[in-house]
Image (cartoon, rainbow, N blue to C red; front, side, top):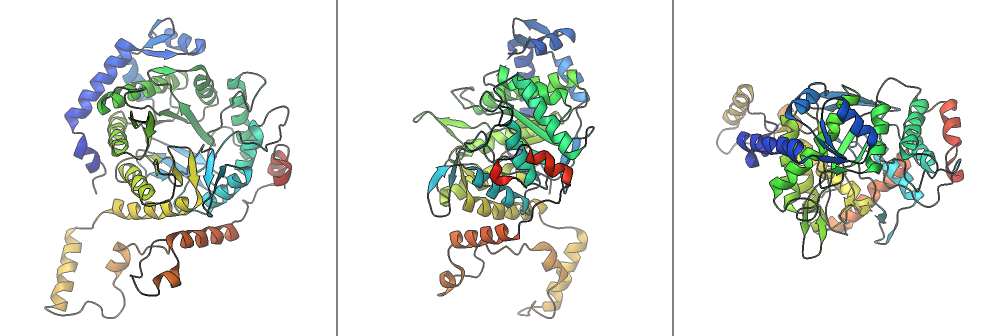
Length: 485
């Protein structure tokens, strides 16, 4: 399967070149506002034009910065490592940052610490999730340590995760009330390094959103600066809304966001050449009838594909798409929206897919049952990504099988052929594959029943990562009392 055929369907080479030229014009003629004196000085030192707090990046500076950007990088986890990049298969990560949870009984509630633990267990037992992530941040119930709840939240993530981590939690005025936010973010990264006792590799990646249109505010800059100085990978995210924080047209939204993202890529390469950066877009359309961001809209896929096209053009690993949507129940709408959001990155050259399972309600809601259903959608898309083996060898084999069976013959003889086992995805029990029979519901239950059964199985099978006594001691200094070892 040609990995960018889906992108090519909507964006040809001329389209991408035209968008690139507009990106260059935006960077060099309109500029990007940086709320960081240190960043402004870095740009000045390297010859960029700076007018007040607006930086103008030339095409030459952009091109030189892109030369030092790595195509791939490896993230270290407690029990597994993951290579992310342009030459790898897409890495799926779970939802993050949602303040509300939909429970199996249909009730909605604020995300709790117990929900965090439950989802960490689901992620750790998932076949399709390769990286773990904080489901929500700054929740009630975390006991401050030295006046801060920053490290306690990271400690909970580390305790229940054997996979590499995406630590969305930057220092905020809520979890780090003393010192600068950059200092807090660096302490957080150093804590993860100390936990792994690894100081010269990539043990955590993170990022934050630029401020559309064409700005990077002081809080985001503190986060970006911390990761650059600690030499850990950056995810640079644009999440704009058409006709509100981005132009009304889709191409205008793509171009503006790309310029904003690239401005941080350039800064990172000026300060730390070779630092991995992920080009992240979660931008979509706005529904002006309700002044609402719509993550389940078809335009989300179109914008995502445009960003994949540009990220590949610049040879930057793309982190885009996801099982997102606007539904607030795990219903038909949620399924359609999530499949559309996943389809673009799953069937193209994409490095990473955020919000891979469970998210809906325009980033505000996570559902246990939808998490499990989305995993099955990902498995379907993984099969689609493999495509069809239509090689000469396979064609000959197929003809021989047809010739052997002949008219009105039978193919069901003896053992199941190797071709069948290799080319067919035999789905899990989440989706019904047993046909519509009188006893189907009685025997299998509804999809929600099957999702609950899978959830219970995973909770029972989960085992804590095997960590050292030193690691346990480090975490116990930060973990809430209920969750200490």
